[in-house]
Length: 330
Image (cartoon, rainbow, N blue to C red; front, side, top):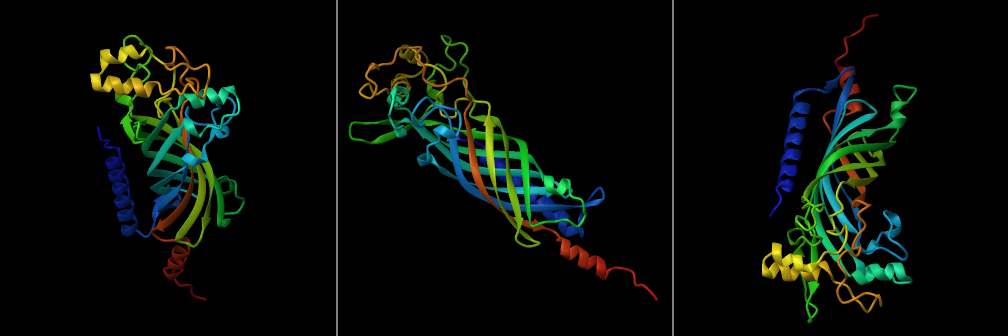
């Protein structure tokens, strides 16, 4: 099933752009309280990293940077519009696309813990579409002592709420080395939606997240800005990579799937390589740990941003005020 999220995100950003452009063209400046409201639109791009159950490094798996595999780094690209009602707050709307993946075959085996994870031999990949709104806060501007204090370099933090769409796929390789990818969610690889596993509900492919992070912004000119930020997304699902709990009894696949899908699901559920981990069997015993249910999946990006200010700049407004000032007589 194709997602409508990319189209919705594009329409939302287009409507917001048209709205702000029409307002800035109809007036010399927007007014919010006693201060000028500024609008900025731009692009952002940079590497994205996935933090889930698959892949990692030596030792036991962890929830953050220790198990980051740089080989799975992907490029994020997107666009944003930010409204600045004053000098220290920004209200951002953004939409972007990225790609995530994880592979157990990247694990370097030096001990028993990582050998078991590598023998699991699972992999996944997924497109990621997202839209979100966030509040930016500029501390150096909020606590400035002088009204004319306006440095080119401004640090900030931000937090918001968003929506993202994913669709994990897992691979099977035939005897000739040809790899085929299959959508994992419909195959119920961990018993989602099966009466035999009542606590495992089918997961939705479109979910909420919390984007948060920090960065800095630099004014190249009155019109052009650039910057860099760390954008972390906290999610509420452990199934971005379709791995979370334990292995199920493969006999149940036949009761819920077509014969063809059941055969594929059995293979994707258990791809263990017994030669890597000597105590592993050809088929893993149902109930054996497959993922870590205690840690939700997450992903983060290091984004380079380029923005264009819409409407009049500070220097243009000062010049216009000077030109329209009432004459003085001496």
